[in-house]
Image (cartoon, rainbow, N blue to C red; front, side, top):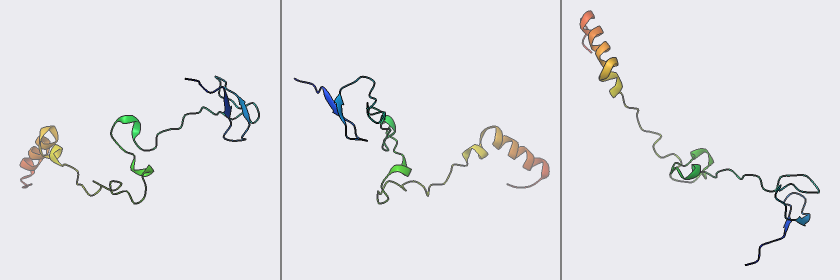
Length: 92
């Protein structure tokens, strides 16, 4: 297998020797910069909806879900609510 020894700058189209720094000798742009994620978020399985195509069916999936109110009913917050309601004589 033979590896490349030359590279072409994507900004100014100058052909030059392959360098570890990745800086173009003509325009001084970084040719080996990180590309960034498209929308897959580094393999976490969670896609970024703001970067998805406008006609992607999964872009708006789950936005109409309601938030759980269980934390208000149980635990410390629920106990405080029940005690306050019991002291004032109110129901719910």
